[in-house]
Image 1: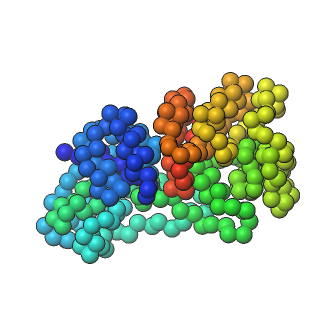
Image 2: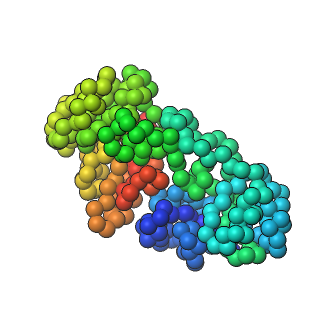
Image 3: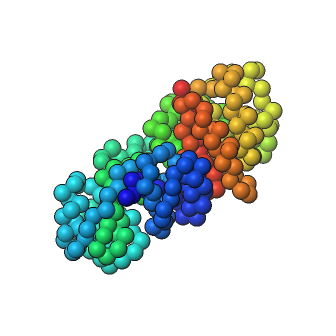
Length: 302
């Protein structure tokens, strides 16, 4: 019996599998990027989506499969892998799911969404509930291809969308490891006041944005006890996660920042111990976003 299923981003099945092993979750089979387990669902940072109530359903015909899903609820997301023609025909019989790109800071969809996939021509796996409101956990945006100096802003947009909160006009933000300025650009566009910190210079166009100030120094040299407290601390610093953990703990202990959004960047092997330490912080959210690479996002709100 399959009691939960975990969908990894492409290329990160190994990280998800190791995380589940450490959590005592048995993975009995992989269906593409979907880990199938007889154990109850748990929080999994490396899963884009978790199917929390999967059940196997007989599919003697395309119509029967669609009717079975419709009898449970209206909205379903399809994870296509095998039997493409048959699954496409089945999907055509279901109400279409509007998956248009979000216009940030538009909130995440609020509608109920399930997920299904064909395990065999005559058998599907369907879960009426899942953790992500997005199709296969993929958060897509209407991109700005002219303003930001890099595409790093997309993972920040995703993080803020997933936690359901973002800086308000006039709130103060510290952007550590800011160069060339993708996150600073996104924050300044929200009307926040941003102090960008990096040993490398910010893109001149970003440095000139209203509300942006720059400090060309190391983020690790800052003493939070000597800094003016901020509403938000952001970090996209390239460093080992264990070192970032020390920095975050220092700012938390000093009470110098209310909200935190940071990228844990793994160099070489994934440091699962450091990821677990971040997840153990009270109120923490740790997740692998659709726009993350070999990294996790850590967030904690006041």
